Length: 251
Image: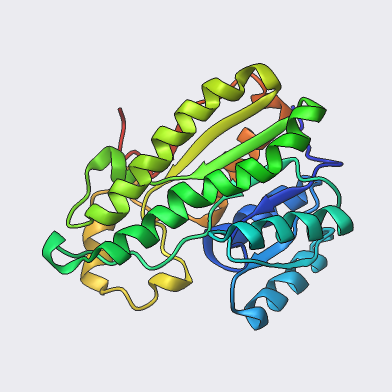
């Protein structure tokens, strides 16, 4: 088994930092062409671009807000013109995820969660699927979260949106199964990346103490799961969720 992605183009949304950056590196090292998608921070994206290039990855900058239909269409058009047709889509981009009791949320925040985790997968799939179906090969991989399985609280907006993303993915896996396009989910636990730097240390210590494997997960752990789902070796696997959280959700 080689898990090779040679000749493929893999779009990982929001991959200038964090988990997305690690996923893009893994797919690129397996032979895929991987653009660096970012919404606003071009300086950070350029640093990631240089890191991808140093690793020998065929890449480009690809700015877009993936919750906006017109920008998603432009994103694919730009990638197609430079790297080729998109074969793999990893839906990773996210926004802030504060823990609040329901009285402290407003609907606008709930809507922002739905935009990232239900609207974005829909927009990306709608744009990618014509080409994937014509080639009879495609991979849609949604980065979900253990929070749905674990019923995390006070986290209702994020958990609800992730539940919607999971339901959408499972339904789409059945719809697309005859076409050669698979739809799978990777559900990480809490994996500290750049945006967690200011999180309270006591919160981090409390979570770490619950992990059966007694260590933090890393972006590379999540990336390995994505590489499997993206590969030919997973061609008969669809509609599945792989929890990458050291045993926190064993069911």
